[in-house]
Image (cartoon, rainbow, N blue to C red):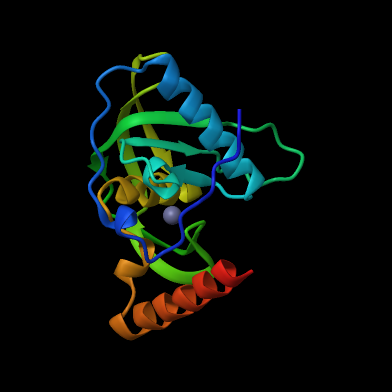
Length: 173
Ligand SMILES: [Zn+2]
């Protein structure tokens, strides 16, 4: 396993629609394990393959926040929202591709999601609370959408300028 570098917004690869996965190959399993390791190392609660420059429909997440709680790593190939609640929930979201920037995003409070798991089995489950927000945020990445796209244009531009500055500083370092 290895930790992969995470792309920072703005990057054209973060704006693309990712391709569906046809078969869960050993290479893709290895990629999913790298993504989990990268996510835990960051640390973060979710990561989508486009964030490490791979335009495949693959996300990983673990929204267990309590320090001493058992981890619940999830790997989802081709995740798809099949149902969403009318009730909405607002969370202050962040993103590993937009470090240290946060914004309130309103999304369905509960969603039903179907996906292919790391063993290649079809799965379906309902998510609520932080898990619901996180899985929707990660699926958005597969469609080239970032949480800042939900914010007001001025706020989005301000964050984008900060990220451009951060990237220039990192390039110089
Ligand atoms: Zn993100």
